[in-house]
Image (tube, rainbow, N blue to C red; front, side, top):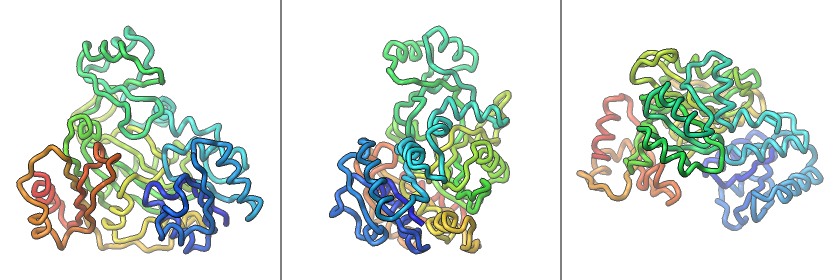
Length: 393
């Protein structure tokens, strides 16, 4: 099997996906904009060959790289980046080279445009916030008066919380329209509650081979308020979230993918959406969760999600057994500009046996992921909550 991996050096977890694919006998062919001599040694060992391009934005160069691989190794069976930014490029390459597996150009809009996602949510009967496509101030004010303030505005095509803003009054709404961006924006009613994700590896029937949940406070608050970051991953997925996650996968025809769907765990009742404690779908991401989230899934469930993904690619099934050695895996990250009760060494002294990873994040990730990360795992949720208070208090 020939698997072309676009941008295998970023995110860093891609090297593990490449490694497990190689272990399953897959020929992994990389295309990236990181020079070969700067690649991680483990990634180099996982790749059969690497084709360097000075810019992945230059489609002609990426196209020629794929053509070279076909000439040398034969037909491409699979092409992925596992990176939200490159999903449209993935789809265009699959179309141009007639690659059977994965979304092509005619279907990519449903996976990257929030307005298209919303239409599918509604048609599938999934609970979700009301949405308005931004046009002029009068229409925006009418929508805000219907759903009530605050409202959220965000790019129709965007990654994470980039470009998103919460507007709490008509004055803030008017200010947004005075400096309206050139790109298409959508506006949604604001739903109070924590974000809970449904993460899964799906087979060719859109059935889960693996499931997980991540719970965290809204990223927008963390970025705009410069708040510290904390969240956790667990195998204990509420049955209602599990049901909605599976229905969402079916609605989008999300087959043979690692997915990351975002839901709001409602903090109060909303007419037509749900009661406090229910879940409402926010958006879909047809790629694994970012950062160290896949590693956290491994720590939480004592498994190897990278291997499960590779087994899905090669055999369309899971061989790795379920584990009953389950934890809550906690991510606590400090930001600059805060004062803390406990020092680094005090954290190590108290939680050294529980910590599974410590590192300083790259500067580009500081606003959304924090600067100094302490990742630990606990059997009980109560112990995890004490850990968050100790590290971030």
